[in-house]
Structure formats: C-alpha cells, structure tokens
Amino acid sequence: MLLDHLVLFVDDLTTAIARFESKGFTVTPGGTNGPTHNALIVFANDTYIELIALRSSRFRLIMRALRGLGMLALRRWLKRDLQTRLLDWMSGPQGLIDLCFRGTELTEINNSSPLSGMVLTDPVQFKRHRPDGLVVQWTLRGANKRRQPFFIQDATPIDYRIPAGDARIHPNGALGISEVRTGELIEPSVSNAKITHDPTLQPGSVSVTIVNELDATDHIHGPDFFNVDIHLLPKSSDQQKT
Image (cartoon, rainbow, N blue to C red):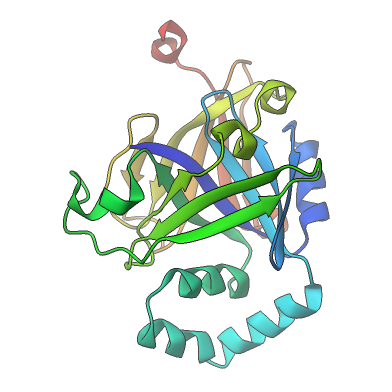
C-alpha cells in the first residue's frame, strides 16, 4: 500500500496555484472533473498534493450554506457513501482534508490485509479531462469512517493522472512527501511515507513534511495559506543514502 496523494480543497484554484508557486513549487494544471477543477504538485517519489476547487464560486457558497444549515450532516447520518465524502470536501473550510492510498485491487480490498474488517463504500468510476485533451480515468472507494483514507485504482496509465518529467522538478528542491501527521489514528499503513498519529492535533487536522534536496527549510501554515500545515525540510543523512 502506498500514499498516493493529499487533497487540499481551496476556494479559488488560481489563487492557490499562485501561492504555491511563490513557495517554489511547480504546479501543473490537472483539468476538470464535473463541478471541480484541480492542479497538482507532483513529486519525484510518485506522491502529490492535489489542489482542488469548485469551478463555480456561487456553488461553493451554496454548499457552505447547506453545511451551515445541517443538511449535509443529515445526509452523512443517512448515507455513508462516496458522494457524501465529496460533498464534505466541497462544503468544508479550506485546507488539507483527505488522504488517498493506492496499491490494492479495489474489488478485493475488504478481504486484504491490513484492511480486512474496514468497511468501504461501493466503487465509483471517475474521469478528468486534462487541458491537453487527454481523459484520465480511475475508480475510488472510501472508508466509511470519514477520517480514514480513500483508495484509488487507475483505469488509464498512472502517468496520465500523475505527470512525469518537468512537472516533478521544483525550484525549492522538493522531492516528496515523507511524513503525514494526523489527529486520527490511520488504520492501514503505507511503505513510501510515515503516517503518524499525533494526539495533539485536532481531529481531522493534517500536518505534512516534504523533503527537499536543498539546505532549505520552510513552514507553510496559517489561515492566509488555506489552513495548511506543511514543513519543507532538507533530507536527513539516512534519506541521502537511499
């Protein structure tokens, strides 16, 4: 099982792209998927951060209003499906709001170790139209427990979804996500990153460490930066040997 990506939902995608580029990240336009559009911060170790927003600012306001009225909480109580999870993204505050894992056949995931016993939503197929006209397709399943990960299986080649080449070269030297700290205990483990339960964090909170090849450090955080908490740190001596 591998960490695939982190989801960062924002109010305005153009603003988010500019903010991350100002921090030395290369941001690649992802395309459109129904009411959303996205951009990707892709790393050399096949992990990435997805910047995603609703294409309509009016729709975003409507979703926030429905959440405030308790309508989405009612749906969550009545129906724990993948659509409920996505509505939670669309209606919630800006920030790092979800984790995606890959590496297991989704049709067999309930019977596979270490995920046996985890209740998942039914598989749902998605597609995204890239700016170059290429159509990316994949299938998702989500844990019924909202703060547990969701899982992805590609239906098209993975480099359609996670671009290679210059998209993975960042002026700040970023190489990949090395650790994710969460306020929840994440049940499955991954082999390409450290997933740490930090009880000092609020439930649902996420803190991310991204290693870089430069002797540079940065702490990206705060409400002016989409409520994210990202640490950009140099590689340790152990990481330099691998």
